[in-house]
Image (cartoon, rainbow, N blue to C red):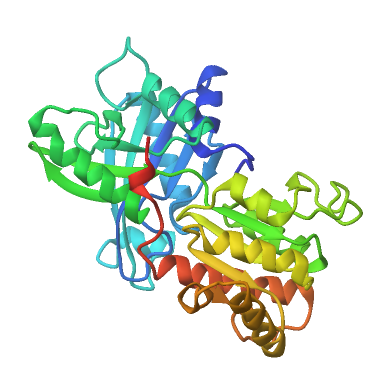
Length: 354
């Protein structure tokens, strides 16, 4: 396996442009205790190198072997693994899960009309580079793919329900499989990264930034105290030294953004919270004890913040797991953020798609 900081599509495109032949594997259906959700992807070189995962390690060896064969023959294939399938015991799905994986080679214009065209892959990578929400639609009969922009552009009438399917995929951040126009179409949303805005360059922020980055968030740190907010303490992180309310206003948190205030300084935390409460951030948290939270609520009320808005604040921040160390507190915060995100429909603001 190759670890890459790039997105999986960008890595696959780099391989292709470097002269390698490449296939993509996409999980299109899961049942039971399958370890990876629909939409999970792998890119596989003809050499066997790969990025991504479709099963957390259970069937990857089988997938790589199948992909190498398909790269040579320029064909697509739909693979099924499950308890009724003898191969499931060999590849690690004997616990009861089932998995359906679609394999497709990347091809160019001069090849057979089968598989994902490299021009489509290039467009997907270009859209990801500018954080444009798009959907990759793949015909599971031949692997031919296209990019859908669910932004209200006029589409032929037969295509309208495809656009609606794409909008739903983006809104829920969930792939969709549906027979449309005599083809088995599978759509995978590519939303911009989730964002986490951390206010306060404290020890907990260092751990929280690492955990959030590992789970796919774009992390932005805000702290006007230059001695705290340094790239030595927070390498590879976007840092703003503006006052928190000004910085958050510029960042314009949306339905895919979480804001966590960690400074313990009311001048900074309160300013951040008031600005965040005026946004559509899906999660707003503030560090402190129950006593500190009550004092914070009283201050916010005196400054004119309504009870309805104050109820949006998760404080004391994080799930009550008995955490003591900064890393444990960061873990509890990340767990609560995830629970709010995954148990809510507010995972994408389709109305803001441009």
